[in-house]
Amino acid sequence: MIHCLCFKYKCIYFRNRGHMKIGLLGHGTVGSGVRKIIDEMNTKEISQLEISKILVRYEKDITDERMTVDIYDIVEDPDIDVVVECIGGDEPAFSYVKAALFNGKHVVTSNKKMLVNHLGELLETARTRGVRLKYEAACGGGIPWMSNLDRTKRIDDIESFRGIFNGTTNYILSKMSNEGSEFAVALKEAQDCGYAEFDPSDDIDGMDTAYKVILSSCKGFGVLVSMQDIDIYGIRYISARDIAYACTHDYVCKLIGTGVKSNDGISATVIPTFVPKQNLFATISANFNAIESASRTLGKMTYVGQGAGCYPTAHAVVQDLIDLMYKQDIEVTSGESTRIDNKSRVSSFYVRSINLDCIQDMIEERIDEDTCITKKMSFVKLTSMIKTLEDDAVFVAEVMHDCK
Image 1 (cartoon, helix red, strand yellow):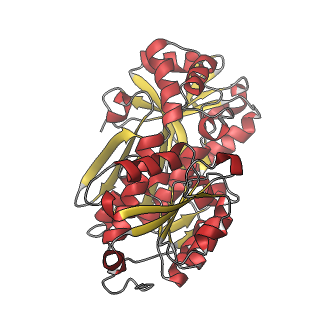
Image 2: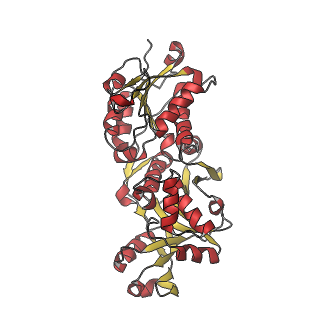
């Protein structure tokens, strides 16, 4: 067997042996999709991938001779080149991934929550062990978002990105905008369709989008961002009234995640946004994602597609495997920790709260007794203002003025 732990030189050990041998952790929605693609598709690239072992949780789940309930059958198997993690959640996924990296195995994962909680440590472990951690599927599902950030950075700096990163909330907001559904009804439909979990908190509170903003910032800007530093506003308390106001003023409400790199540092936010109907994001419906990057030489580039689901996510996982198989020079970077500075992000905001009188001097237009448009202010000032309201059910949306 030919081993290669240094990617400074041309790595040919997969081709010498004929196949990339894979250990698959998890056989749920995404894991089973990965197995089906590799087992059933017959392209030249797929024919060089081989799933050797599959980790399942219980003995009763074993339906294939490759399945095991012992993680050490995979992470300590010298013949396995790459571990694909599709378990989800923080633990035991983190421990399994770290063990795989430590044992000199590349890792491909779709687990955004685990990555965000441990990204710096995992990237450093990958770097010191001479292997690669790839996570295209953790952000954007089937959209080739992360890989295109890499491609752009080979020539130019990423100046900013923004987009609809979460298919669940986009489905809910589309139902409310297009059919006049109430939030609770649209959420139930999303759950019935399999787009939303039984506990949808990560989606509707903006956390899932924030995970993807962090991963995009690491990939696009080369920095590690703390979850605590991002200004995050979700759609939990949105009502049909808010949607109606947006519609009558030629806006469509979307949950937008944004990252901006400037001389002042990095700005990162997640917030419902009233998007002008002429803007491309306003046309993105159902559970689709749309993410835009900006750079000096390319200008704005937008990627649209299925953001989640069995095959879109599994497709991205397999693309990472193929990239690993063909890479000749792989650089692993752990990124530098940085603090977010949202003082430079200035906008006006739609606010609905029972306590608007507390912020009278910050109001530009009073729409109703409990709704207003604020004067232009930074996100830092917005956060301070929201605390002043002392209203747990406040709803906030940024008003986007640019149509492009």
